[in-house]
Every structure is written in C-alpha cells, then in structure tokens.
Length: 145
Image (tube, rainbow, N blue to C red; front, side):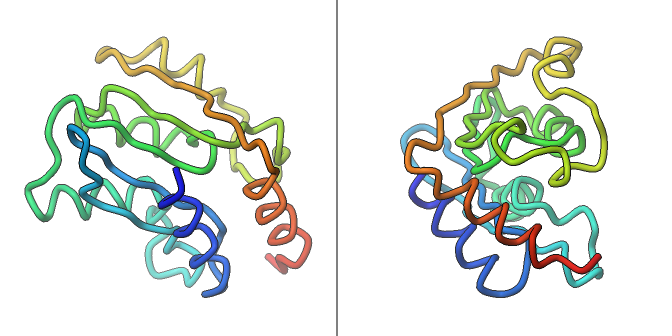
C-alpha cells in the first residue's frame, strides 16, 4: 500500500486526482501508477486502470493478481479489474471516508463485486492516518471542474 500512497501523492503533485494503484502478482509489485485522467486526454486513466494497462503491456498481469489502490474502486475500475482476471482488490480509503464528490455514480463497489460473473474480493485495508482522505479532500476543495 505504501507504493500506492506514494503514487497518489505524485499524482496530486502533478495536478491529477490523488489516487494510486499497484498490481501485485505473487509477492512482486509488477506495476504502479497514479491517476492520469485529469488532463482530459484519457478519462479512463484512473490509477487502477493505468496500473492494469502497465502490467498487461509488460505481459506481467496474470489471473489471480491482486490490485492495491488508495481508494475504493469506481464501477469502471472494478469491472476492468474483473476483465483482467484480478482476484482481489485491496483499498485503503472507503467511499464514505471521502464523500460522493470523488465518484461520478452512486454504484456501490461491494454490491457490484457480488454481481460479477468472475469472483472478485474487495478488502478494505483502512486509512489509519487519514493520509488518503486528506489528499482527496484537499484536491476536491481546490478542484475547479
């Protein structure tokens, strides 16, 4: 999760949404990314999707991979993880910790995960020092969208 937190802070420093993700296969982190969607060139470049793309491009993504992320995944990221064969998503900060303004729909990730045809476990790791929530709330407070 430390890699995800660093990627989120880097994304924030670059003016992007402060979310970070890491794909782990076995015991190895094979891809790490922060969000890359704010510049408008690719609205699907959430941290989770960007990390999955990076792992797939390097042929390092395999069924059973675990996706770590700083935020509870949105519907798009959850579905992308399922398509890529991820078995578990571990997230630090829940939607209730940052509020609905960080999401574009009211779809609940846990309910969606239960409806997937491929099993995918969601595990709430927690954000014990509030670092993720603080980054997101600060970003949303200065966001001018």
